[in-house]
Image (cartoon, rainbow, N blue to C red; front, side, top):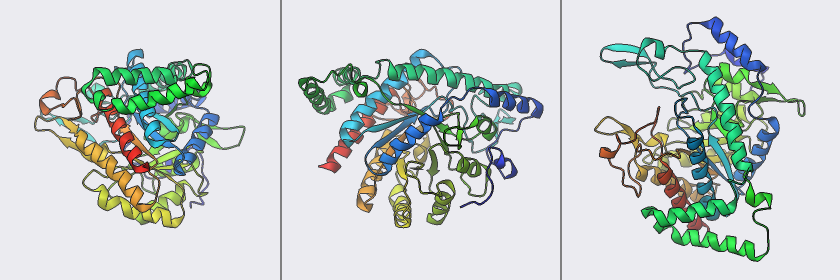
Length: 451
């Protein structure tokens, strides 16, 4: 546990990774000052509500579904894309809720996921070397010097797009779009119109029977809030700490500091050093937080991180998001689960089956195989069952668009298809059909484990 006094800017005294090299520091400072006076995007009360739901997930009484874009973009921001994303997330929720027989905590990688860590600081093309693309809130994908120069004004554009995104999603969640009857009609349409949907027709029929039973009990399904509305929260990786700390607000209710950029923030596998700036920043905010757990994580380092990030062992405070790869999870995850369990730490364990399974296709596209993603998720559940711990959730890079970025699934996307609709600004995402197919397959797995 750190005894150092925490402030929203105490991270500035420590080593930091994955930051853009701004040339106009006066402009950066001006933008951060502007951000510090703008309204919060997420309220402390909402963050506390999410923490309560995640506490249930830590105890096996709820299930976390966290999903969304690899990196949000300014160019693809539209009502249609947001609506399609939310529709798929709700459909996945219903499948998982039926399979897990517990409430599903819905958290989007959205309204702030505009920056990405990179393996290299620069990129080379045709003999020219420029700064790497770090997400739309930093620079542009266009390969020229002006586009790749980090621009502080992009931080403001990300804030305003995040505000508009969150406002629209709130209207969908509370305005009838998320009603149980509506979601079930979408799933029935999925079963009738797609090849993979036919496989899950029986599961969808069972969900229909449950809704029919609710009607038979004369419960007004359209008028009861729990049936007609959905709780929904936002999250993103806390990467650009100048942006994040500018949006920290102290709550009058409990006197604690909250990151107002999202309901939940997480630290990536590249920035989780206990002695560095990102861990320092996240330890002081009262939001629910996450930490990616990759192949290099050791039990000792993990326990040290837990002590720093959740010193009071508060349920729902900390989610550990494993991202091992389908070929490594069987060996690497069990020792970590045992160490955490034996220490008495309370955490949510979630599975990110995307980042450990990235490959490069022969035609040069970065991609992921649906079979590898599914294999890692299934191993995650099996390992938790064997260890007597709770598999608390899943974490996906996905979109509501019909992209061709990940291989396989019932659509049988091949390497030849990747170029058809490869739109990602960073990593390959599951498309709407693949994400829904995966949710139903996970629901089948969860149902079998309970029987």
